[in-house]
Image 1 (cartoon, rainbow over the protein chains, first blue to last red):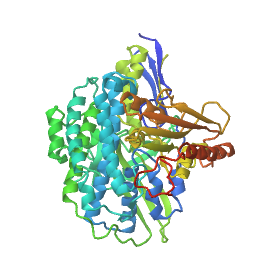
Image 2 (tube, rainbow over the protein chains, first blue to last red):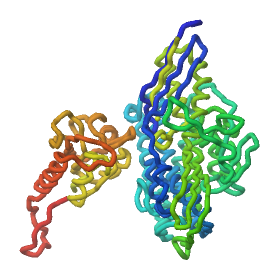
Image 3 (cartoon, rainbow over the protein chains, first blue to last red):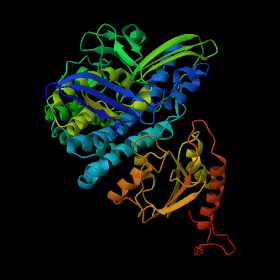
Image 4 (tube, rainbow over the protein chains, first blue to last red):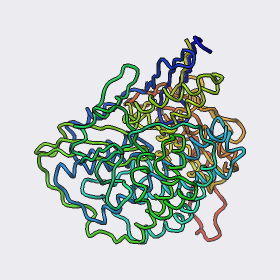
Length: 431
Length: 158
């Protein structure tokens, strides 16, 4: 193999959200180049938010993604609330957590079963998998439907929900409306626990990395909307300090900016980071489900992220049930908002990892500047670093198998390319 | 029970065709997300699905096929930018026995998917023709319900 050059090339990555490609160049077993190329066109959201009224931002940014619109809405409303000094009702805070539970259930059910499981079970896609594993697909559809239902009840509709506002919601649900979801969520909780067991039985490549995990951390809760940004290497900052520590750089081969931790390089956001940094905050059923399959932090094998996503499904179902039990409708659907000039930053935990928003608002409530750093931009450099090490490990394999494994290594991150173009095809070149 | 679902995306040229037909008929306008689409047709025994298509026919031509018989390929439908759209929904539903007893697909041949564009003239005309055609499909008077007062006009069955 020495001296033989090969290329691993995937021109259109499958089972990821959006359009991207991978090119890996090998010289013998040495990796000479790795490029994760995101060619989905740029979206320019930050530019066209300028001059819009603050009240429009949640609806505009929800359009960035059909999979995680709630993440965009939550980071947007929290950032603007910080800019305007708005305090929200504790019941609104609970409803926002429930809203996020719906999105995590939808997104994780899709990725665990439909997008990632076929890799481990040896199928090209979910359609091929459905012929032999009908029950898995049925379970996925039912779980996703339950997540969709939560989103519809709180957001008015499933895709690009419309009810989130600065200060709260345009309308809040009755206690009865939420209680009607309990039976479905109890089934979903049991199904998620069974899913943890199922996916923990998959075979995982022997591959660990020394990651900097970055996630929100809250004193009492597994994080959604609140908390300080922490890492396993000592980072502990408020959202307002994010841009002092992280910056984005343009790379020629991608329409997505690469986010870099100043002084240390790539970092990892998403399920592995949240789990490793917040394990003790998981509710008992989720912690138990993880421990039962021997999953304890630190999890450093990115392929095992499928188990962590399943544990987070357990978390989201348990948390939704807790909120529904404790919910009492707020006196008002939204807090009073007074316009003032200001700048606000917020970070929330999208299913794929932290999502940073910053807005400057003028005296008339119009947006002066906007900055949005999606999770896939933050993971992009880390995905390339994983590929560099992983490609070396599979360099001697037959090209087709190596290519498939490298694609799988990208899917570990559940990348949302549409969001990041601000993505997938894989090429391995042996030169 | 018949369910009529039009799929597509607004503000993307002819991709809105299915949505516009559904709206004009007062029926279900759907994003075309495959997984929720399977849910959207649960419980009906007759499904009429409308979407913009690319088959190589002249723009505005209406193509009709039996969704239960003919496998649809993803390249035909353009309503979803993600990987699981109308074609995949039909294929997966077939595997899971979740296809209604009758599935009729009306495709409107598209000319443009330009962001921000309105539907092209031939597609706008096809939308009107298809609305009328679907109305006619279901305009046949149904046997009056035994409780119906004499003279009550039977509503089209949707």
